[in-house]
Image 1 (cartoon, one colour):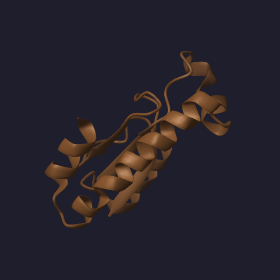
Image 2: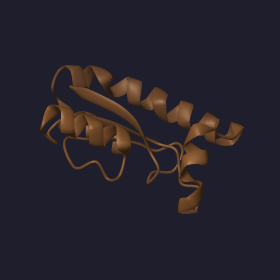
Image 3: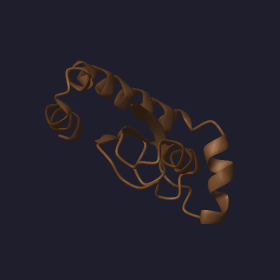
Length: 101
């Protein structure tokens, strides 16, 4: 299974592949972990940045990003698409190395 999700802890324009882990407070990931009964699944974390104030998180994630952030996110998504053949082939370490550098 491959889960693609937004990530407050990464800046817009930064995407990361993660092989397993907890939900980190992300409600969608929490539901997936609970449903699967496992934290062992592949994730692509799409950086959206953080509003700076934890009270603003819900409003922040439900609204469109700024044009600058959107352009950065789209560029990172293109980079992520470029490594997807490696992911599909099971060469996760190579995909991570290519995306993370």
